[in-house]
Amino acid sequence: MLDFLGIGAQKCGTTWLHVNLKRHPAVFLPEPKELHFWNRPDGRDLAWYRDVFAGTAPGVLGGEITPAYGFLPIATIEAVRREFPDLRLIYCLRNPIERAWSSALMALGRAEMTLDEASDQWFIDHFHSAGSRARGDYEACLRNWRAVFEPARIQVVLFDRIVACPLRVLREVAGGLGIDAAFFDTVAPELLAQPQNSGQGHPLRPSLRPVLERLWRPRVSRLADYLGVDLDHWR
Image 1 (cartoon, rainbow, N blue to C red):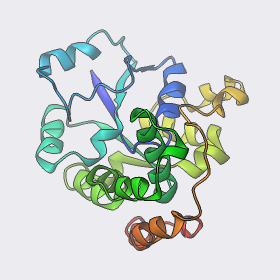
Image 2 (tube, rainbow, N blue to C red):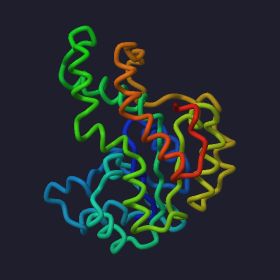
Image 3 (tube, rainbow, N blue to C red):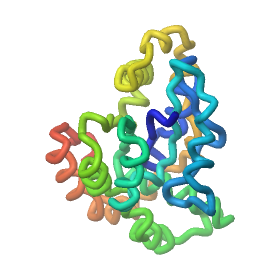
């Protein structure tokens, strides 16, 4: 049975979440991490999807984490709700400037280019691409999911807190899922804090920061108002 979904966002700690939730004896997560069933079914049907979780033992929660689900269209989110009405959702957020840069670096690798080969304009074009903008528009994503699922079912996790206090974040996620949060106290702190899929760590080019600030600062302000949280450190 599917009990929860990690719905996004890309480059915001979802691999870290997958690795650590998979440690928990009351959680089943399939491999590979991202099934992409709801955004890219590729001929697979619901019977196939349900079968992925059919072997989940009693008392064990089944879940999957695919960041691309964050910006699914309303019609698809409604289909998710029809099939799994009691679903819990986890949405990881990161400073969208950092997220856009990290995503662009990943795209650079996929294009088989080095950092020195990519011009500022190459990065600017990526920042303004429909995919990059949609993945970083957290408010729009949350509004769509909250239009279908009650806000109380959607747990928002900030990447900053994953870095600063990973154990506390995992205990909070466990509490939201209704599983034993104390389990994570038994895991070595260095394992919980270990970055996952963190990329090459190249610092943002100073020449590109103004571009990203113009693109994302107004949206950060609106997101902070929408969620009722302090995101001044993102600005």
